[in-house]
Length: 158
Image 1 (cartoon, rainbow, N blue to C red):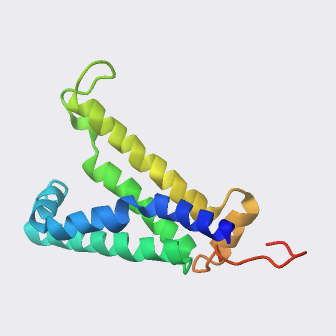
Image 2 (image 1 turned 90 degrees about the vertical axis):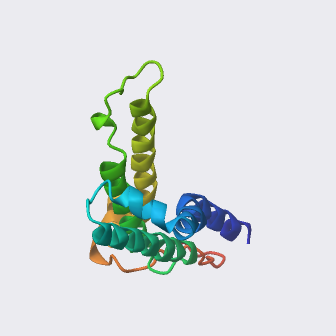
């Protein structure tokens, strides 16, 4: 039982940014989310679609990871989402005040960019595992669940 609690807690920590916080923020501050999305696309309608799509990804993929149903593909989708959002909204290289020493908004955005990439790495570990056999299994069956809450019976290996 303790192992199930630990596995659930680890998965919850991985998705906590998205579910509930980022998803709830998009719902409560929908207009501001669209304004932010307009930084990547200049028209309101596509920006709205980006926000709604992001909201769907954050909720559905996070739930898949928490429940263990289709969790490997969900983790891959969230990894991709983290990389795409880093490239679209964490463009530290465009800031006029980027520097490694001292204060600067560009430096803060740089750290946010790296955090997005690190989170993507965590999701990719969940998706593809830590060895070539796990990667081969993911590539062969990307929709399969990792069955994170399966309890091994005495004498059996998972």
